[in-house]
Image 1 (cartoon, rainbow, N blue to C red):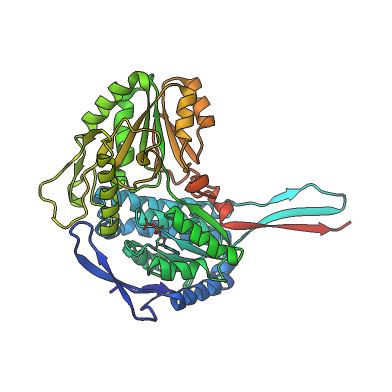
Image 2 (cartoon, protein in one colour; image 1 turned 120 degrees about the horizontal axis):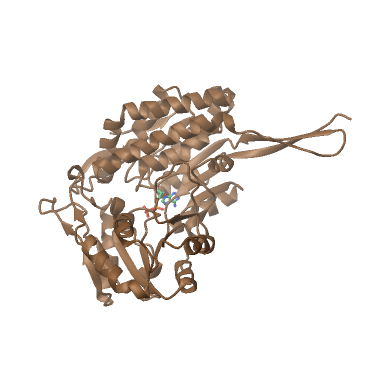
Length: 477
Ligand code: ADP
């Protein structure tokens, strides 16, 4: 049975409870994790506070950076083991799991290198004054992370936090937390002092809620569903704690009549089927100029019908869905779309040797989807693509921006002016032109507006989120 990781030690949950872990590949329980609760979260926060006030907090930025770079190297040394854990836990293709572990390492390399390049400012002020603005750590950061990219999410949120001298308490998703537990051991072997990183596994409503409402947390970061985002912000508000939230999307890929379809179609399909559609920034809506609608649909259909669902070790396009509950939700969504009469443009296919009780869903593309249909507006978080026609640039913008979300968008066009006009008008944290970067790009600031959340992660901008400024005003005459 896995344990919690608190103050550099593997410890059981104080309540002694456990949670079974199911393999998405077979549907069988294959492990148990510790069911951490509020007293465990409390112990983790105390350990983190002690690290901020102790060894970790006293390190210089250069020393912190060195530790982070060392963690990145250790992750790469252990990539085979970590990728296998990640693939087993999530059901994702092994090649994708490997990329995710590389990204985990990359976060530590990037923020390790950045740690001692965060400079303050000097402000010209009244005669006889010197004013400097310095950046300081927030203190203890609570990180509540989801199951879709457990390794990447871990790196994305803790590497910048640690780079700025904070200490972290992580509540990974109960459905996929094995990689974070092994990672914590590796990080401590790499030189991270005890208490700087603590992992409390458990249910969201128990360990997660206890972390969100803890009075000694200084910042909360959360990636997950909008409803839980509201619960977390509400809990944090009672303690006046800032939240950084990334809550999903319904991201548009806008295809104009002058698009290079040879280039666009494989990328468009890849942007929805990657990780079986369980990606916040999945390109789940394809908006197509009416003049080329039939042509695009035909090409999407041809490519989509080649999409293969298979076992993670066979390098399929899609593995299973993460949990039985999520599998049920995605199937229900697809069934409702079919019952409502939405035309099916194409479906992928499943290998014949898939275990009967695994959580496999056949990818599907629907269209034309009416603008007010549930599929045009709501996130499925599965391999389901909606295709909608538009008339001109204004119509494309209205349609692209016309959901509650705003995370990522892409423009497919060979017209430079159009690319720039659209890039300005599309709402969200990232816009891609003739490409779709989705989850990639440690260097690229990422985040949403509206129901997609707020705050920015990734890139150097994340360092602002994980630190606070102090203005020092000196009067020396
Ligand atoms: P999903 O519905 O896709 O599983 P969630 O938003 O429920 O996504 O879960 C994301 C993370 O939030 C997980 O780590 C989960 O345990 C945690 N979580 C769920 N409910 C709560 C809650 N009420 N308070 C704090 N964390 C929660």
